Length: 173
Image 1: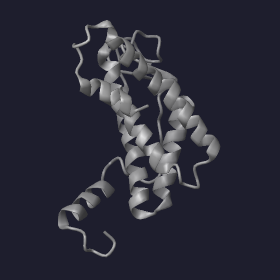
Image 2 (image 1 turned 30 degrees about the horizontal axis):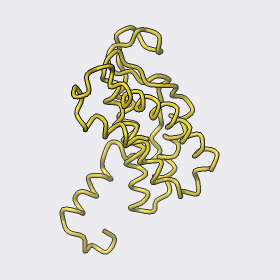
Image 3 (image 1 turned 60 degrees about the vertical axis):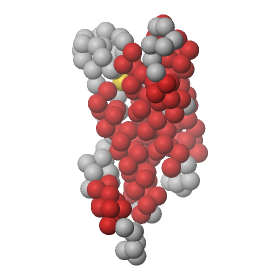
């Protein structure tokens, strides 16, 4: 990328990544206390019947894309943006909630947050304490929900869900 010898399609993809609405340096996180997919029962900080998982999906994308851009460019402002996103979500988000199997769809966001954390592990601006808190959040919130699905499959017959549901859950451990 730096010396211009990358194929045109790679340069175009890189430019698309840099221009993504999720790859903005200094993005201000807006974490949720509870991520709700499906209809909320009114006990998770939302009006009854309102879901809010879209914000989680978007902010996981910010964490991931800015971490990736830090790796690709070396610009620490991207790493700072990503680390701030992970820190804010780990500090505020208590759990995932759904009245149906849709909670499993959230596993993709857990995987996205996990990938961002992995990419940032060597960023000197992300303290050891913050990394420990992030790992605890990943285990307490994401892995707990995913393990429940892996064990119970929402109390359905074994062949109700296909392997892709299991795989996306395993990816965010």
